[in-house]
Image (cartoon, rainbow, N blue to C red; front, side, top):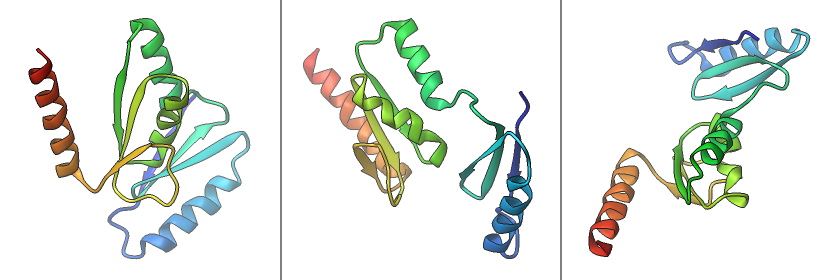
Length: 125
């Protein structure tokens, strides 16, 4: 039930550091590795993920809709829920492949999105 996150953002050779970490974690039995922004998350095989957590929240709250914004590979399981729930899934930053239906370039794009949503709510009131 334990997990470990190994950050390598300050490594002089990030690619080499990531490869070394991946090599060490590949030898661990019953462990999975989820990458992120200059981090490798080592977790037990089959643990709950952000998608499972979001599904639980949506069901418990009986939410009519939700907004989920994320910028990491670990957010993909939550983005994928847009096929099951009325979810506005927004990826921040470029990604080769994403389940999010919408992408903004950076944090300023998130700010613009939130302002637009608030304006829409104010106009509807």
